[in-house]
Image (cartoon, rainbow, N blue to C red; front, side):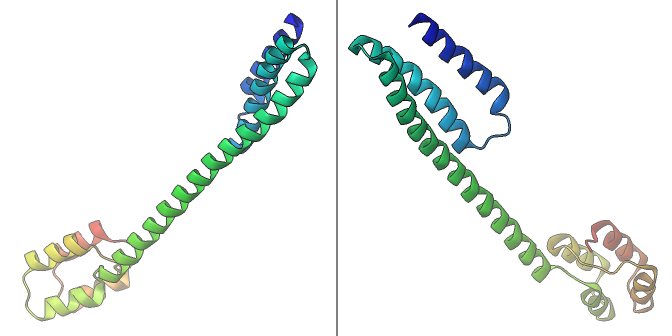
Length: 158
């Protein structure tokens, strides 16, 4: 019995130390649950006169329980990942919807809106600007000041 407990302990430590690194939570739970269940089952089985049967029953039960707990953790992580992804997509859509573009800046400049106001809008709403050489020349030719162009360069997202 002492050898069996020692063997189960050594195997459990080896598996946990080397084999679990690339496993998902379901697999880790099944391995840890199975090894723990086998060890506990062997101890209980020894008390009842059947160490092997206790280890086998405990191992199966531990594997099933550990796998189920691990699967629940995997599902929770996957759900959280989808939520984060959806939130990021929504933030991107919102930014793109509200972001200023070259046309918006030209309209403000041609309407004699102050540079400070235009810059404030760029900072508040963000911007998706064409800051290529042609784009900047077109902006400047249409009344956008160099000061506003500089802020647009700093805030540009393509």
